[in-house]
Image (cartoon, rainbow, N blue to C red; front, top):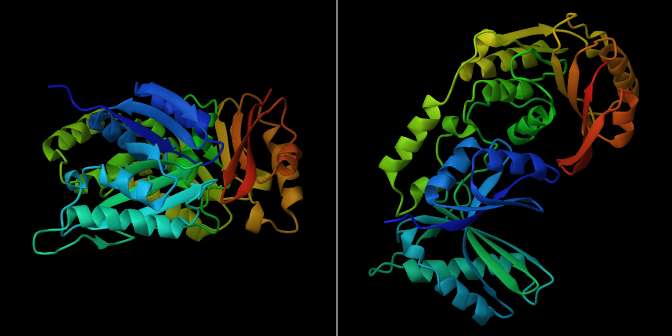
Length: 376
């Protein structure tokens, strides 16, 4: 008997859609389509497992359960009642619902979330009156309602917590870069995954860890403690463990790759070293105190330089001078390439790199640019 097919939507940060689309296509997910805010695809739950395990730039993977017109409360109630929630949830389980609404008659998101929650728990209620309880942080089942122009889409979150929570981070830097965004910066580069990867602003090592995981073909979901679908009532645990084993077998830890990082604060470097060790990448790392304005790579390395440069709340009086000085050092490194996250088009221009490609994205609400260039 063929496995049931579903429609899924993998969400991502604004501007990352092209990178996520390329990832989903490489996974050979079915009918991959780039949309605003993410990528739509079709497949079985096994495909959803693979998406959660392997998509480095996705934030969540939602499984669509129903689409229907919802111009009124009664129409919304009927749509919720039409889904078999007992396939996901037991009377003693936990639930969380979030809702978004735009250009619709039902325009209060908190009310909508409460309405959907009530409909679900009433259906799942046990014979003894036991009902699922609400749990925002560790819910067994997370449900998402999207209402646009009175048309509702109800989805169940297969991921649970955001996929940026890989499980390896033990400390945040002063201005932490999410793991999903760091992966995007690396994937946007021309890095061949064999030459050195250098981060002169490495902080606690997010870019280096994500780069090392990419080079090792290490599925980012393998280090997570749990996914949302593992709590579903109809979850197939033996099949899921086989999927995990396949992902583990695909890992090929490099032995000669160099992950090189520097920072001006030793505590950050210590955390970066710890993060690399957690992921089994410690033997590849070289970390040292250093000022990026004095950056000096070895000639002939043809390395790729990645960085999350100071911007937003990190901006100080000398941020423009920092970009200019760092850009001047980069231009001395013929054969190198870059993928550098900057806080604005103006700051990106101060690097003065030759014929760069600039990729716009949002990071924490800040309109940023990734500067991708080959240094002649």
